[in-house]
Length: 117
Image 1 (spheres, rainbow, N blue to C red):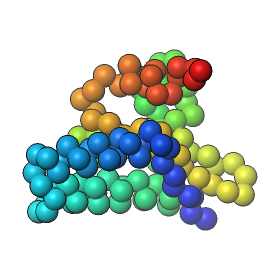
Image 2 (spheres, rainbow, N blue to C red; image 1 turned 60 degrees about the vertical axis):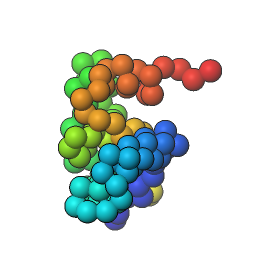
Image 3 (cartoon, rainbow, N blue to C red; image 1 turned 180 degrees about the vertical axis):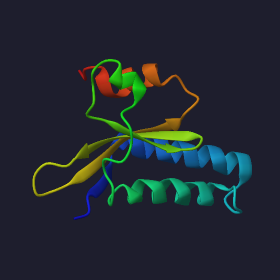
């Protein structure tokens, strides 16, 4: 049974930002353009429907004992997601997509660990 893949509002914003940056840098077309990059990222995310738990636990979270999230490498990006495999409805919630060269410890703290007020 396939899992449903969803993106949080934050992850959708990340994807839009990645697309816009690439569009500015290289334009929409070609093998290295914004459309090709968007297709590559969304294709990898959609593939999580077949194998939702395939990614490894992000090392920044594992050192804190948090093993509920997984990561998918889409060079030069990392996608952090939460596979929900219990019950009748299997799902994958993509929490964030960011350049892997960023400080993920800080990013994960801001986006996943800090309580919302």
